[in-house]
Length: 477
Image (cartoon, rainbow, N blue to C red; front, top):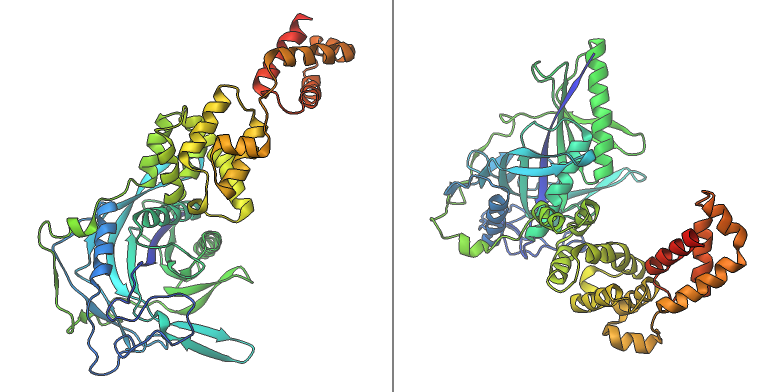
C-alpha cells in the first residue's frame, strides 16, 4: 500500500530584541533563573503590557522577505491554557489578525531539486517560561526568564511530504532569518524551535488522516528522526486498521520513539479573545518601509548570482551558509581575477584555517584585497599552492599583507620552468623502467613520479605546470 505523509510546521523564532515583547525586561540567554522578570511578564494584577515596537519591525521585515501579504491592521489576542510555565494563565498571541498572511520559502532537497513551500501565516506572540526537570529528585523547577520574550511564529501549509523536505525547509528558513538579522537561529539555546504536525493517508486523493503534533524540535537531525518514526507509526496503524487519536507528542531521544504528552487541543480549547490591554496595530502606508530598511540579498538569490560567475553549486551553497561569509565573498568579487578560484580558496583553505583555529569569519584577518593579491600571484606563477596555503594560514590568524608576510616567512620565488625541466630529465633517467610502464599504459606510475618531482623541487614548483611538463616528457621520451 502506498502511503503519503502530510506535514505542516510551526516554527518559533526568538526575535533579536533588547527587551521583551510587552515590558522592559532584558532578553539574555543563560542568566541566573528568575532574575529577568517583572510584574508585567509575570502577569501580576494591575500590570499592563506595552508593545515592543522593535519586535513588530522585525516581524514586518520578515514578512516582506517571505513575500507575505502584510495587512495594515493587526491585533493581539489572549490564548488561554493552564501550564506551570505560563504564570498569567494565558499567552498574548495573534489569532484572527496576524502580522502577515501567506508567503513562501524556497528549499533545496537531494539532487539539487528546488521548490517553494507555501506559508499559511506569520504572527507575533510571547514566549512561555522553561521547565527544568530533575528526574533523580522527582521535581521540576521553573525558570520564568523566558516569559515574554518576543516570538515570531511561521506556519506552513500542510505541503511538506517527507522528513527531508521538512529539514530542508527549516534549514532554509533559519538561513533567511539570519540574513535578515531578526533571529540568531541558535537551536541549542532554543531561539529557534519547531512543532511538527503530521498525518498519513493512503494516497494523495484521500482525505487527510488523524493529525498528531511533535513539540519543541530543536535539532535538524532529531526532527528528521522524529518525523520518520511518527510517519512509520501512522502508516502501520493504517495498514492494521488501528485507531489513531489526535495527540501532542514528544520525541524520546534515548528510546528513539515519540511518546504522548497530552491530548491535542483545538482552537476552541484555547478560548481566544481580543487582548483588552493592547490596542490594534495600525500600519500607515509607507510608514514602515523606512523603519524596516533595505532587505539584504537572500541566500538562494546569492547562490544563483555566484553560479552564473562560474562558482560551483557546492561552493555557492557553502558560501551562502552565513551572511558574514557571503558578505566576505561578495567583498572579494570586484578584486579577484576569478570568482571560481576565490570561492575555491575560501571554502577549502580559509574556512579550514578558521575552523582549526576556532575563529569566526568576522575574526578572519585575511582581508579581501590580500586574498585577491594572493590569487594574482598564483595566476602569475609567482607563488605555488603550498606557499599560498602557508600565507593564508599565517595572515588569516595574524593579519598583514601578502608581500610583507612572504618576506617574514622567507618564502622564495618558485622554481622556474627550466629548473623543472632539468629535474624531470634527471628523474626520468633514474626511473627508466617506470617510463616504459607509463608508455605501456600503466598510468598509476604518474602519481609516484609527481611525488618524486615535488620532492626534487622541494615543493617550490607550480604543480600544474610541473604536471604538464612531466606528462609531455613522458610521452616524448
